[in-house]
Structures are given as C-alpha cells and as structure tokens.
Amino acid sequence: MKKQTKHFPFLRVQQQRFQLAYINDSSATDTPTEKQFYQWIWHALKNFYRYAEISLVLLDEEAARQYNHDYRGKDYATNVLSFAHNEGEFSYAEQEDTLRGDLIICPQVVAKEAAEQGKSLHDHFAHLVIHGTLHLIGFDHIEDEEAEEMEALETKLLAQLNIADPYAA
Image 1 (cartoon, rainbow, N blue to C red):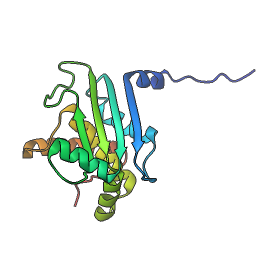
Image 2 (cartoon, helix red, strand yellow):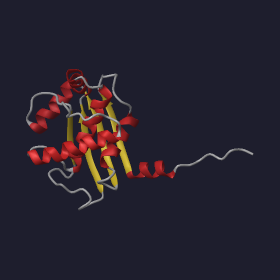
Image 3 (cartoon, rainbow, N blue to C red):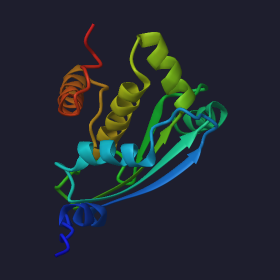
Image 4 (cartoon, one colour):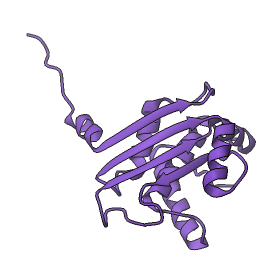
C-alpha cells in the first residue's frame, strides 16, 4: 500500500492571500532568496491585512539613489524605500482588506550597514524588510511615540523569527 502524500492547504491559502512581485535588478550576489523575502513580508503584514499585493525591487546604489532623490529629495542611496498605494493613510483593516505597495531595497547599502553595525546580513535584511512593510501598513517613526511603537513591533516580529533586537546597544 502506497503512503498517501499529505497536502497542506495553508500554503495554497497563503499564496492566494499574498502575492509578491519580486524583481532583482541588483548586481549583488549575497541577497536572500525570493522565498525568504516572501516569508518576512508575510510575517509583518499577516496580522494587519487579509490580502496583500506587494512588489519588491532590489536595485543597485545609483538607481536607489535616484528613487530617493526623486521621491524624498535626498541625494543618496538608502537601505529601503516604501511606497504604499494608500500613502499617507493609516488604514490597515479599516477601509479595505488588501494592502498594495512597493518596496525598494538597495542590497549594497544593506550590506554596508550590516558590516558597520556588526550584524549578520541575513538579520539586517530581515529587519529592513519588516521595517519597510510596516511603513506600507502605515506605521512611521517621525514622532517619538510613533517610533517607539514601530520599533517595539519590529523587535517583537524579529524575536518571533529568532532574530535579536536590532535596536539593542
């Protein structure tokens, strides 16, 4: 008698609820896999949105610098940029059940920061992906109170993934 294969409907349901468009236009070779990015984004958003359509684009420094210049007026490459399609609204679960947005990550900046801060590249990528996803949801860190709330949530989500507090001294 042949052993029957188990089917896990959870994975099929998850893929129906969260669609990731992944584009790697970076020359960096030490980036996480698409699957890892998918898991980190899902981990950050699953308690806020029932559905999500996110694009994640990895760009080299010059292209990331141009986006940062065009959209934030800053003339340097940054680690992560978040563009929520409902920009400026804190609307998770209130107005619609689908989060739509774009994340842009510059792997070279992430690697440089990880080295400077003595963090593993994997952990720093995870932190920044979760950080960027929380921005898509509507969290921010301009005001001290907002920053404390966002950092606490990042720390909690990362701890659930067995990643140390990125803000610990």
